[in-house]
Length: 403
Image (cartoon, rainbow, N blue to C red; front, side):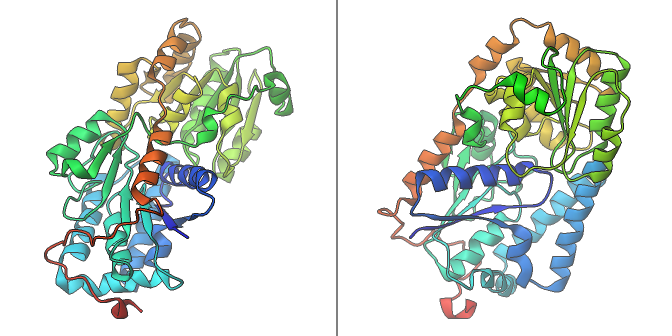
């Protein structure tokens, strides 16, 4: 049985959503494969206490910033973890860290590791190779561009890249990734269930949430952590007295959920807490989506034919700027410079007769491209017989050292 581990991270929600989407699709298409999603924090559990504390603090601080839409030291933190990754994977003195990391697979080494997580994924690749030198390593960026050198691309580490945008391809070439190690997808990876063609009883679904089927419906979602911008957008729309239902996805933010449930608004609001299942029915029912321009958000909106209203990035502009540019170039959504200006964007989207035609022209089947590429790389009949090209500075420790 082929063992496939998909590496994710508990930062924001896009990485986890992409990982779960791949798991669901691979399990359906390859029932003989053993597929699971693993968290980077769990993989690092055998590392030194200092590294684990630094990683845990970094994730907690980032999510704290996300909930408040205030980002401090973001680029500095990214550069720090890129440096940590380079040190661990390239210096002989850090080989013991890889052996420690490989203890995560005490029940057996994987045949395949797929990462939708940047920066530290190559540590996991090299640790897995301490146990299985022939393991396939596949990186699927969930951003439209390479934020800074080393964020997604580390050409010194043998891996396959599946790239969902032309900018990622250009960045791979500029970063020295061999052409044989990357493949262009038609778009980004999301859950295959968003492509479902089954009809939805819109009126019945809206009534089940206490909403009015006669009104247009908007969804406000700013990720799995839930952020203050959900509340700010809902208040702005209510103050503007736009006749619309609102479905507010509050993520794991219980305080936000309670505030929205008690919010005085002239039109119906449904506030929902975090649900691990993808919001397929919600988006296929919606007339517009309000959120941040994360890759998962804009791709889910695209595939469900839902116009996107996104708030211009502030602290995350270095990573989301390319996403914004893509939406504006394709004209599949509009940008608001603040939550308070969202009502004008809502009116613009609802009055645009051509926006759905543009969305349909931009639709793709990126997840199916990715599945086909993964199957071709890791087919049980063609599991690699060669050992990955050597890293150079880092000797491959014998298997016994990791046991």
